[in-house]
Image (cartoon, rainbow over all chains, first blue to last red; front, side):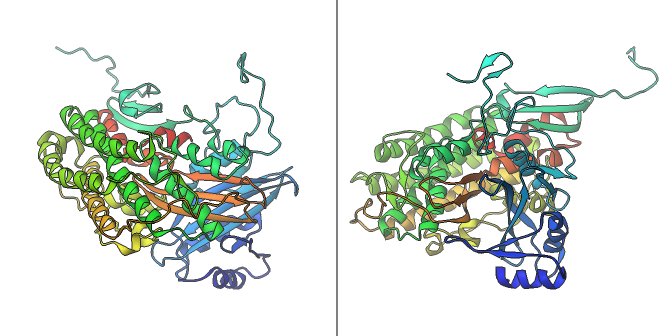
Length: 161
Length: 379
């Protein structure tokens, strides 16, 4: 069982030169910020390394930070063998919101990533089937973005009262 | 003499839709099935028919506490557990101390809700497979739980009963005797259910060796609750990641053992739910014993909630599995982001993995055995 600080140190040793960052809010546990391009490699180590063994991805959520003009992805991992949990964050720019998919590491990411794509427009590169999941395929825009404007008509039917 | 349609022996695949309006999809779910004869080659679930954008509401309603009634409407057959998860997440963010009496009442209603939800899940599962009468007997029992809930909250399905730091109102004076009476009358019914459905030969034939989910696959898909326990893994968040006051109670974690067929088949997932109800009764009894008779259930409710900046992920054991709330706050009166990690959503994602190669009739058993609620899948 390792704490987030220990895992951060371990990651610095395993990926020398990578800019990991520890995030600590006023509430909630510490998180590790991972450079977007590295997330898949980091995920693979987190799952397979004997010291870490994060075998389940509990949750994957998209986020939008309009002030910073950034999109984010939050990963919550747990190891059922070692009993420790970890929160990872990834930030990408609004203009080019591309994050490597972790679907090949944890299958459960399949639908979570589709949801984040549908709701935030975050593109998960390498995802085998990145389609909308909750909204209709021909819906316009991504509803959970803070700057979302609901379309007036959908297939000729008004969407507002 | 039978005339062959194709004498070259070529195989033809056919794509059909099961749903969105189909009695055994438990709501509005469309399964696109690619078939070769009656063997399923591929399944593609299509969801979103009940999508109400709960998460957008949560951000825009302007108050953390006003989100609670919306959580009810996600998994509408276990509303108490949904509320419990959400208020726990907020309490952990606020580092709020909750009175003993409140914790006990919450655990009692959460376990009663678990029984009510399993009764519905098991009943509907039997119904899918052609067993009509168990459904009616189970609904009679479920009705008794809903009656108690109606007395304490005024509603039968969507309660809006739990509040951040407390409860919306105190329970009625006869609450303890009502619950004790229910526990007493319900316990023998589980035995009846075993005789009527669990060990029924037809039921076993339809569910054993069907939809086998190996434990490694289950973990990679982040399965939880009865689906994971059905695959033989002793994993229950009430024990493995204790929340509320569950660490004080004694209870067992029933797991699938492959008694009737292969480990992790539909029957294993089913029997875990049946045996779990017994354990819930044990928890209720212990909670009734230690529940304080006096205490203001509303004293710890904050007048206004203003959350500092941060992110939490809090998970609880809902009847269907791990219900997680991811909440990101940003120094204001409403959340920056709320994501409900619904167990049904995650379990539906693994449906293609366990139904490939099975018969089309078994699809009904597989969908029934993972016990999905579409309100929670689509949110």
